[in-house]
Amino acid sequence: MPDTAANKVTQVLRAAQAGDTAAAARLLPLVYAELRQLARARMAGLPPNQTLQPTALVHEAYLRLVGKAGLHLEGRRHFFFAAARAMRDILVERARAKAGMKRGGRQKRVELDDSVAVVEPPSKEVLALHEALNDLEQEDPLKAQIVNLRYFAGMSMKETAEVLGLSERTLHRHWRFIKAWLKSRLEE
Image (tube, rainbow, N blue to C red):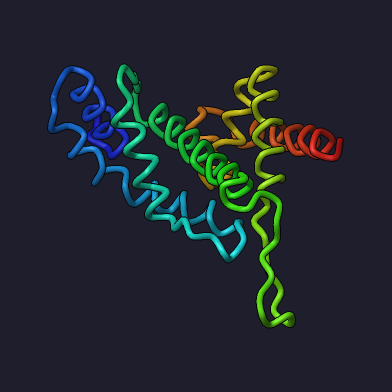
C-alpha cells in the first residue's frame, strides 16, 4: 500500500490508540492545514462580528478529539467525521453562550451613535439547525454526516463524496433531499 497522507494519518491514529504518547504530536502537522481550510470555509458563512477565528476553532476541535478518553478513531475518514462534529458542537456552544442570560440574553446592544447598525449573531438559527440535525441524525445518520462535513467542516461535494465513499451523483441526490428536508423543518 503506498504511503499516502491518508495512510500516514491512519498509521498515526493507530499508534496513538496503541499507547504511543507522541502520536498526537505527530498527528497535528498531518491534518492541520486541511482542518484549518475546512474551518476557514465554515467560518466564512458566519456574521462578521465573530470573535472565534478559524485557527481557534481548529485548535479547540483538535484538543477535544485528542483529549477525549476512550475515543477510537479508525482512520482519516473517521477522524474528519469526529472533527466536523467537534466543530459543530463548538459553534453551537458559542451560540448558546451568546444567547444566555449571563451575556444579556435577548437584549440588543445600543451604540451611542444610532446610525451604526448592530449585527447580532444568528444564535436562534444555529440552535434551530442543531435541533433539526439531531433529529436528522436519529432518522438517517448518513445524511447527518453529510451535513456535518458539508456545512460544519466546509468540505466540497467532491471531498465529502471521497470521505464517505459515495459517488458524487449519489451525494448530490442525498444533498438535494437534505436541503429540502432542512428547509421544511426550519420553516416550521
